Picture: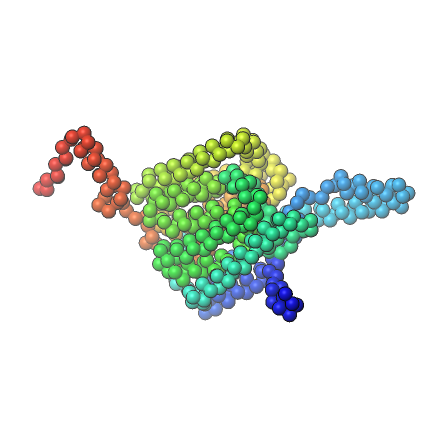
Length: 478
């Protein structure tokens, strides 16, 4: 292709900092209500970018995804100047001191970045608890209509697809230089669950297929947000606004190619869309819990939501689905001979065991376990308390508490706690754009209209017919 025409194909995606600035300006233009400057919506639009500076600091302090510098090799290289005389020794010592000081400075900034992420997560946690008291929510549509936001969401999705497949291309080429930009963080964040570890092992020879699966998960999240807006909020514009904001935020671009971030949340968003059917929601939540552990912590919230209105069905569907998926996983791992190594590796991980000294990267690195254990215990008490408070729960209560439960994991999880933004970002966006949902309760189970009750009556009639029992006499009305 000649040079005058090839210039039109010289398209480069923005780096993380550029994406941050431009997405912030675009979000203000689309969702900021300039006629109501002191509204909660305006504050939420601004604070949704609160964690981006922390992520940028973490990426800047840890520019490569590989292991850290080998201090022994640095010391050997620095002292190699002994053969050149005293001047070589001083020069080698100076080189070692400079590299050591740079490494310590980077480690210090890395800890500051994780501190920022935990502080921002604490704000989002308090925002979820505050939402429990926000009953009156005026309808504040975005500054762009449904068709315009749909077009913008489609354009952003095309850009994110390019991001995901560029990550796969870099993974195939295995570059030795550090990866830069919003499309450069293709390494997995933290140890994922065994289900996702097995899937990653199967997809390792084909990074393009793994990126394709991740893209489809993000598409499922976008469609789920629109569906929740239309069927639960009864406002498709609010659902499209949440979906567009999800594609616009830098968090999605940073981890767009990582299945372990998107797949559990795709299942949870579609579970919210099916809240009128407790068995469907329980099955989807159980499948998400089998994929990754954190959706299981939201089970007490929804069990209380369905109290007296299908709680048993929800719990049965959750346990059966999660149990079958885990049993199939154990069978697949045992046949491949990986079950015992994975169990040993899981038992040795200090990220989820607050009574052990963490050996991973994060805020708790180097901090004694005695400080992390009370935080984990307080979190478990909060998870248990979501079953009893508040009672009764509407959909807004369940949404806010589910988001708070997932955010709370960031406080005690030792492996890069705070960076798992995609675990709760779709739920947080639904919380921001939700209308007044005080009337969205679990539907009652009417014996005449309930499909399970009708199936039970048909089964009883069939059993009576098989054994030859007479039909029960109809009840007499006095």
